[in-house]
Length: 246
Length: 381
View 1: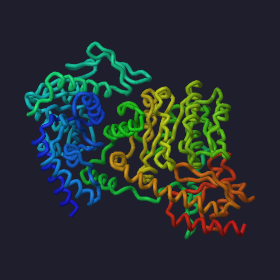
View 2: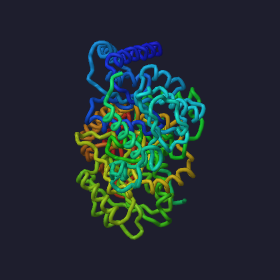
View 3: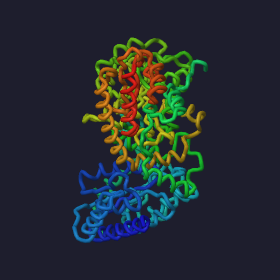
């Protein structure tokens, strides 16, 4: 019974989320990868929310329930039947009736099972895709890391011609340029199409040079730098082309 | 190795296990089971054949990523790739830490009373534990001067359990900063064990010293999922520090255990992702039990006096009757005559003598039964 209910709710949220996207047509940024997805997403949010009306996933909402919930801006109900009834009502109203002012949706897509990416892409058509990395993992049901990389690249391939694909330049499994119609850009530390150079870790965080400017971040590790590069590129993209309706 | 002893807490639990109808408020085991959401996700992972292989020694990348996110929520910024290790419980984290930073004869200054296994862990790594007393009549507060006086040429590290086991004290930001300054000025490691940071009962938010970037090179911070998520049997914890410290600790961790059990890493991932509700619920229950225990202790003021714990699920009352001056003997008598297992205060360092540690991690019924029995025991003394 519980499984049937869960299946129904997944389907119901999907229908409402698709209705929301069709009616409101926000630009969609989808971030995926094995790690650093949340931080990259947060970095993108922090760069875009100054000039645009953005919404992002709540908490780590990133799978079959989480992605539509993020699109509809509802909080998942756990084991509470009352909460789920409320969520269903909210989702219906938001999906089919209320006009949203959100211009850009920034979503986190997590893969665990082999069918996950196809399912998530049946809900969202990303305008911008970011793949943070592909790391060998036992947390996901993929037979090999190369298979996992192929799944991530499905996201890149779903981006339309006017869209943007950002790939980690340091990841060998992402090095083979995807067949995406969108503009493909590799980002990295002294590697790729857009680069950070002179990267140093100090007691205060990371410092580096990007497009001739010295940047300091109050975070540590190379992924903090990579997240900044992805965020900067997306900000430049929207600043240049605007948030176009489909 | 002759100097190394089995923890008095476990010795007491072992003795208690042989006595029928015993009530144990000794070992810090939560009365709760692991939340269903954690178990369900682990079962699904097992059914999908995902848990049988080793992970990287430092742990599953996604788990470390999740840990990094959780740390960032508390303003502690650590790189998931190079600054975090998932370990087999806090004990292994501490053991790997001490074995990597200590040479034979090095000293570690720790407070007394503090967790019973610390001295043994230090000795196993060839080090020498040096105790600095907490100030009991001021709520077991840190005595920075006392700690400073214990620092010698041989001192390599300071070890602080915050909130402190067995006193339940939350050390103040000011005192912790003073300790960190001592570590910085003397080039010492500051090992922070914060496994009880979620069970805090006051309004004031818990202060994390590891958020101060100034002390990143000195601080090695440890957190276990055992208590917060009722996962003591899963043996899962993590530590984080600056990358150069992690490189050294990782060598020892790898040689000791290869990696933390992958099945438990799955549990930890789900706990950190979806376990906040359970932690909140546990904290409310422990707070209620703390109040119950204080109420019961108030009724025994002729025999026991205590400082109210601000956190954790332990209380360390002082035994006012003559027989309590030898806490080990006292606890054995209490166990044999009243069938109540407590931990002798001497297990937690010299200043713990004359006290007993009581856990309110157990159920209300256990607490009430134990106190009923203790009241009778004291009357017949």
